[in-house]
Image (cartoon, rainbow, N blue to C red; front, side, top):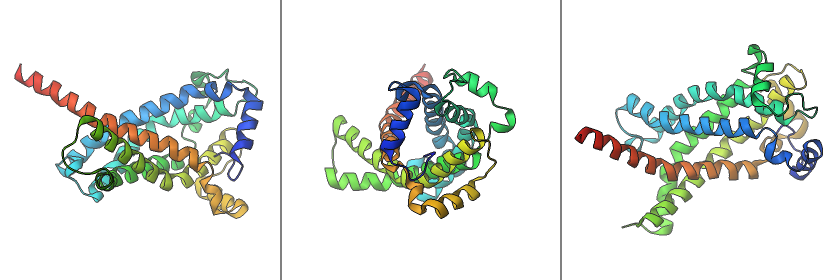
Length: 256
């Protein structure tokens, strides 16, 4: 995504040349795993609470509009928490001189506070657009899956399969919306943090479209769709399980 329009194979070959074959699995992996964990943890924990506080009902009883509003608000604290991780990931995955020794902490400490929010607009766009699309469409996608797999009484296996499929479809829907903004965000962060070029989200977006066409904003969409679709599937699978376990625990505490 930092090189819109470039072939995936070419970029992978260059990355392997810079960091070696194992670099794909090691370079910048700590901030990426940390970012994904914090991001999904905050989204999963805060979204239902925000929805219930705002609209006095659970998300399953809400409308598309209420779910979008709650998802949009949830993305704000989510983004603020992951920004240092986003910055360190970009620095580590472009660190061909091993300046940071593949250390997330070292990269964060070496970045001035004024640079810690570099790319914030793009990250906010990415998280908000995906969350809004995901929570707004997972219900309709579940209806489609129900028609495809059949409604009525379900065993645990069938219910899990339906959750996975609807979550995956909603995750890919979110990827369709957030990929262009994430491509621009990635270029903005690389330009500012690595190349020392002061640019912003809108100016960078216009420059990419002018030079390489609007289609280049969807660079890497296949991998991104698979990644976010998988994340959406896991959220749809684990969400109800965790909620049920929590409700049982709370019920047990009340009975005691």
